[in-house]
Image (cartoon, rainbow, N blue to C red; front, side):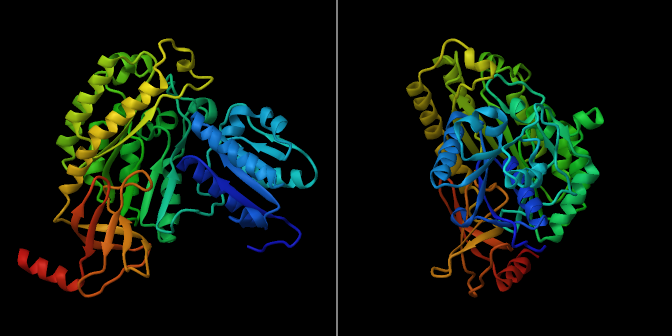
Length: 458
């Protein structure tokens, strides 16, 4: 790739979820392929592309603050992503420094957009209905740690949960063929990726639109042939966790038994109000089934409190459910009314102070549960993917299979008894010696210790 001296340097500001991150990586790759200089230094760039989030109000405010801050520095802006899809012409009207907006299904046109901006045009490149999804043939420059990569298996969502604006921002589900996903996974393996994270809005519905039925089990088995040690699946909706899918989790060696179940609530009344009636009778039965078929499963969920109409009885039901099910990891959000969603106009709003108090109560309940789950790993030796190394203290920081990036905990690793260190991007055996609410700690197991342990077991 040759950078043309006549082309401006473009900086990127990335906000939002991992799906947004993949879109950013494609835009960076496309611009670099076209000869543009690409930088993370906004000060030195002529143009800044801001890939925005518009999922909830807090995310919108962060996106707008970023845009306003850059505009006040005199930067020319290209606004991409969910905020552009959501507000379109309003952004161009409100931010004169914005030279273009690019929708969630239009990021593949970023080179054309920038060329039109250079020619003095103000560009609206937002499709009314997003239909595009990138594949292994679209240029991409990864922005994650070299050992970790996200792979988007599908885009969009066919569900219409009352609180969620994603279908409006990203369109209906559109899956990539299995062959396309496996081809990209092989590309990432060749780049040294150790952990591949499959992402979409509803990964357990993968393939339904393309093949007429979900094909996650078949996809996981196909990915078993890829030389990547860890394959992690994000967002396993309950209805898609069939026996065939759970068997694939159990039988494919590099698929981690890590299930991220966005259940949102436990009470049937609240689930019906959320337009998730299919989930009302499945939670406990499904969780028992998962634990029976995957005894080592690590379970994460996300919950919403303060949904309109949530009563004290509904919340107590959720507290009991959380106490009984003992998830490894839990994220809790307070309800955010989003314009354009059915829940925005629902009556019986819960006061923000009450919603926050309920969130705090759930997290206080969960903390000792998470601590106990971590404590059960003390004494085990597990593989840890090292991600940071403090050269001054010698401490390394990484993750074992039970921790997903950014949302879960870390493993703090000391050098082995023989002084063995590990560089970022490598996977090493670590003997776990300590645990707290969120993190684990341990020591690298050197070759001598491994040989001694194997001989003692023989």
